[in-house]
Length: 110
Image (cartoon, rainbow, N blue to C red; front, side, top):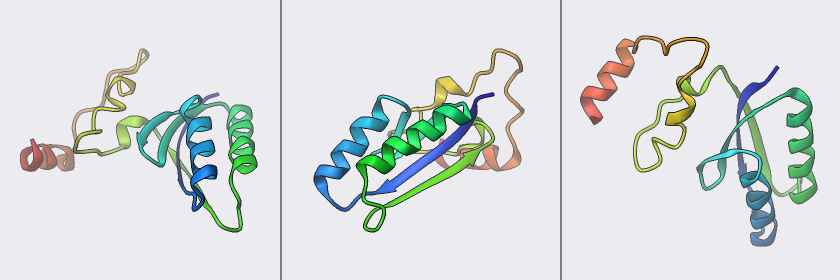
């Protein structure tokens, strides 16, 4: 079963940074320069993390993985806020009603 994750990194060396970024761009949706959204099985996630480990230096770099229930649970505003917009729609169920927080944020930020 596929699950959603956010992978973020802080790679200190420019050459390693470029390798990690290029590797992840082939496997995930870029949300920001060093933040990616992954939708994959446990086996694919393990393979992706192994690839990141091979390109980063774990004593100098910082890599974080956060589980996400669905892309709909991510709040975003700004230029890249629609990067995952197409992922919100589910073929099996309708999107949930906007929460009070969603409505408030829409009122404040448009």
